Amino acid sequence: MGTKKVGKMMLMGLLLLFGFAVAPEAMAQTKGIEAPAPATMADIETLQNNLNIVWTCVAAFLVFFMQAGFAMVEAGFTRAKNAVNILMKNLMDFSIGSIAFFVVGFGLMFGATTSGFVGTSDFLLGLSPYGDSFGEQWPFTFLLFQTVFAATAATIVSGAMAERTKFSSYLVYSVFISAFIYPIFGSWAWGGLYNGGGWLENLETPFLDFAGSTVVHSVGGWLALAGAIVLGPRIGKYGPDGKPRAILGHNMTLGALGVFILWLGWFGFNPGSTTTGDGLMGYIAVTTNLAAAAGAIAAMVTAWVIIGKPDASMSLNGVLAGLVAITAPCDAVSPSGAIAIGVIAGMLVVLSVLFIDRVLKIDDPVGAVSVHGVCGLWGTLSVGFFNLESGLFYGGGLSQLMSQIIGAGAAFVWAFGLGMALFLGIRHTMGLRVTEKEEIQGLDIGEHGMEAYSGFQIFTNQ
Image (cartoon, rainbow, N blue to C red; front, side):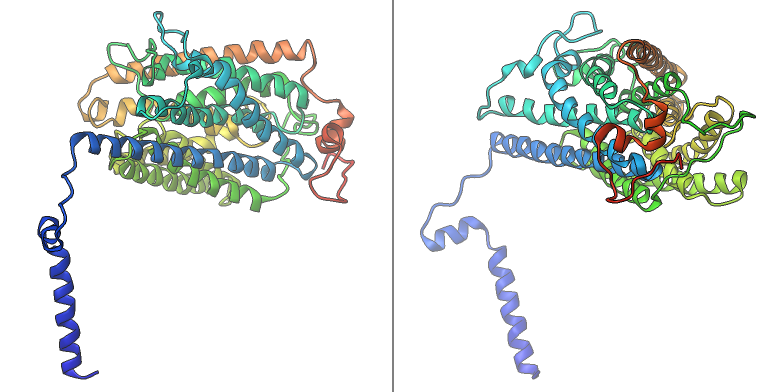
């Protein structure tokens, strides 16, 4: 290309740049039209409100996709003969939960309250009409976002109760957690996000759980613990000597895919909890990612040391452990703090899985209690240590840590206590566990009359 031609192209580029740099008012005068009026504060507020709605909806969609992640993890970590049952439980958790939370749960969680213990308004969202103002539009967005959180808490229990639970009984449980157990505790910690105001929010040093290490994950984890205890272990899990036997999942590829889907969904779970389209979401995404990565590495190393191999299932659960732990403090810790939280969670999940399996002899096929209950507890307590403003490690004293202990303790008493009562009640009425024959044959055939893999009917317990 000739020098003159290059020079002409550069000149044209400069002229174009100059044209774009000309003030709009000057261009308007040149064309004989009026310049647009400068944006008013009302215009800016409308834009921000719309951005908040768009971001919160996108985040809700990501959290909804986590249902697929949970389904893949649970199906992959269990046997092929129970895959349809796992998928149906995850499907119904969200479907039943959406209706139950809309009709009852949302009001109990976010309705106005004088006691600080339960909401008393906004059932059926107060039958609110859709209108043009942000105040009329926001409730629907907020409802959707909170619905996907409620569904997450409900579906955690599915993995711990896998391969031996009656489907009809599980549906009853799903209604109760979505309509009552989860929302009432949620009102204590999060009610002030809408029309309520819970007693944990009103402590002298408020209990902090930004995106739900306790409100969502520990509540689900302690319910899972209650369900696994009441159900008892799967046939063949423990030998005559009481030692645990490994019952391997049928598809580690599915399990890994599920973990990656959950990792993606967590970028809606944590950053989405800002419910505001601003720069904080990027910071939270970084702390979330660092904790997940640190959890995976720490779990792999811990399993390698204890078991002798870099176990894949432990490493995958390490990712989830880091994600669960960072959920409470994700907005208020440094990146290095997030790594530390993830490392501890990764080590903790391996030790917890082995302790629950070998010492407590509680059969949890996917490690749900360890991932969500134990690591949710750690994440909640970590706020008291690593919070940049009120944490013990940053000169904040013990007050924040004490509030975190109170909140986490209340969650355990509430969720585990009601969970035991609920599952015992179901066991002694409609029955909680399938027959021995159905369990050996597989829940897919016995409960649903179909197979996940065509022509692969199984009649043994392997």
